[in-house]
Length: 253
Image 1: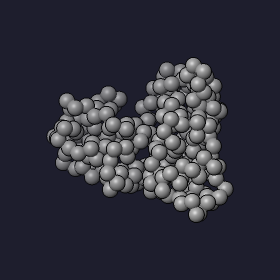
Image 2: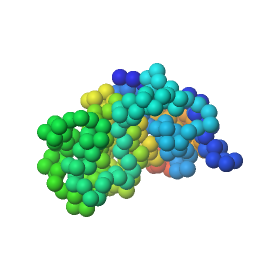
Image 3: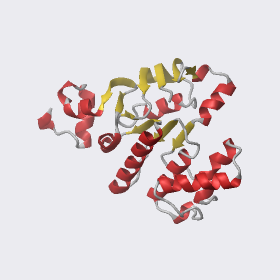
Image 4: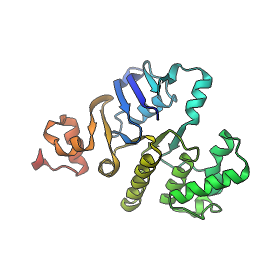
């Protein structure tokens, strides 16, 4: 499985510097998290990695391929190996659950209908939604929609899985279920998973490699143990972020 690596990513909108010289290596088989307060640049960084926004400086490597400078053919090959779980699930309302999950298979593969339906059934079963193929998004809950979105994201068995605020708007129990599924799928398929979130409970539940952004800068990177057990050594902005989340109390700092 290939690593995902970003080097010296910088991006401005007008005079505002949104990302400032960010480098990080996302490890395969782990849940890699980009965390930080709202407006710190998390989503802009994710869009730069995916090529939706082109940074003024820096490189994005999928394995040994410089994605932003790659040929259209190589870019298509990389994109074929990406899965995306959107914050709003982004399901097609006019399609059934099964049709939503089948959509990337129909677009990107030459599988016959039996193969597609078999893969759809497997992906829905994997996220705990077996037998829901014929339901429409309007007929299921928000948590179920998020799981359908995850099933669609893994339909192509991607090497890289991106999740943008996967727990946004969900109740605590459902949010933890989504965390558990993401972690299990990452380990099961040795996927390089990138999760963008400001939910520190998700970090506790599934975070392994962690990048903390603050005002567009990479202020800290490390693992979950370092984050939670060595609070005194953390940058002040990260300590404040942990305190605001309720995971760390002032008497421990």
